[in-house]
Image 1 (spheres, one colour):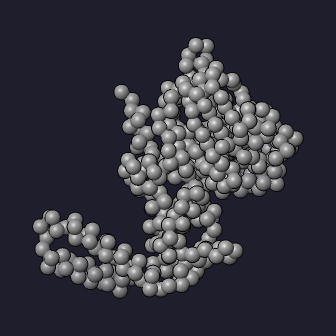
Image 2 (cartoon, chains in turn red, brown; image 1 turned 90 degrees about the vertical axis):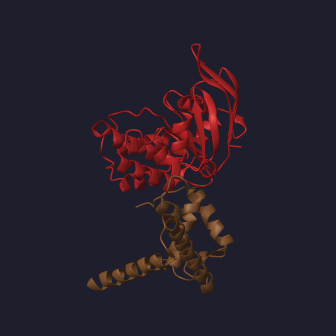
Image 3 (cartoon, one colour; image 1 turned 30 degrees about the vertical axis):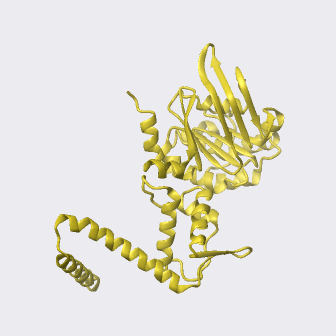
Length: 231
Length: 128
């Protein structure tokens, strides 16, 4: 099993963020981690990356605790930029090549070319959507076992979303697993194998997209709207 | 761009239907090689696993077969394709009938409508 969460609890200064969360994610899947704002999606992702520690429960990546090996095996796209604004795309490629032994600079350069991004452009001169694309390329150009994308399409227009999702699918290797956290369900529904619904730190529903669609006779987006109906 | 999907049905079933249509319409010819799972998934805008599931189902039905090294091909069996094509037509027509009979149309009226529609279609085609 690639990822195992067992009875994971997380509190932020007394406020419950995750309550007894358990799930398993195998290799070779595209998983949608879906939930409204503040449901715990990013908390789960930060735990997988070892950026925060659980208050209780266990988290295993490939059967081992989160650590040096899992950092290498996980390519993570955080929801906020951590890159230096003054850097040029070319410098970012060098930066990533230095940091990650599994980063493929050739693939990155090709993807930037496909997306029409100039290697001499500086981050500071880019729109929000273009910055997101740059970060996505840097993450997808790593040969990782697990790709975790936190809101990869949030700041991008609908045409750009299709483009980004296509880029993801094109570069997704079926030997790896991809986790996409988002509340834009309709957009990701057709590319996910499985979905996990989370609400107020509790898993509400999980399963195969097509099985859920068959069972409910509705799209996952519609099921989501029912499960998370706002009063 | 990508293929269009209805909200209420599993995506792999819709993929099967779209691929079947491409085969019975001849868009993908008899015995023709299919694009790779990855390429098809990209065209459709779906996950490769979902496309794989649809193709496995088409294989089970005999419409496509895979050759370990060379890839996946549409069947050489023309009769099978004709069968699938006929089933498709019957399904459509029976839906039509099921929708219209309850509204009180007689069989004769339906026949007339269909004939009229076909004639008009011919006229339109010749006009072009």
